[in-house]
Length: 308
Image 1: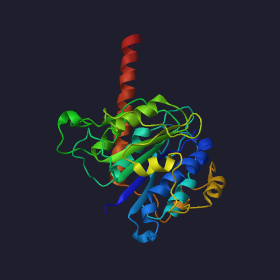
Image 2: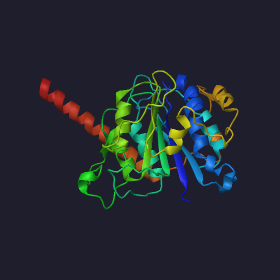
Image 3: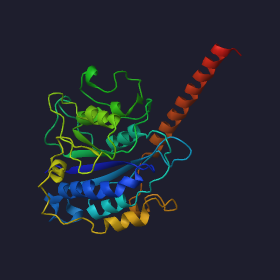
Image 4: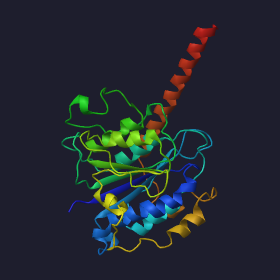
């Protein structure tokens, strides 16, 4: 049986804080329990289900790290502890770096390319849930996205080999090409977040998915390839095989949420955030050069308009 993997990509700005307990209790808890119910009788070390977490913030000096990630875990209790220990702070009025968060999740999945990127796979084993409370950063930024192989150039997200600038929708288009379902949970009905979902679910023949929100003004769009999540959130259906992964999830939330002095994701040790340090250094250098070039363009434009 193929391994099943789920990555939750969460916005860690202060804008998400007031809604997080509701999202975790009413949506993520049910999805995670249903996702792992087939392996509920198997010990965690032998489970065929893996979970991981990615958090992202915004640009600016008042925000924390742009993107952070955990390793993989097969223990749903550990995963709930990670989710319950996210410190929500910063952000201000800035747009969130959703593109960077999705790209980080994309590189964490094993590379399994879909044969037909335009056909939605209804039996997917790899899933990503984007949890966002802010609009995506509007400009394209330097982001590493895995390159697609054996696809026509018109079908790839990177038509030009040297292009490394992407926005959130451009990154989302890569998910179906790698057989990864993309779903979204948003406490606000933001059209741009729905646009990201549509970009990651490009089956034009399929009707719009039902909005499975039980909370007013929430936007809950679940990919048709994520059957466990659809079953978990449908009215009248429940996951009876598996007991709640962590009965004290609310206690975790109340004790750690919005605690600025709390060490970021301290509960994740000994797993910790893992990444390719050299790749991150290169990406940071690319971003620095990107913003320097943009500043030089602005200076040149001002000199042209107003003279030296």
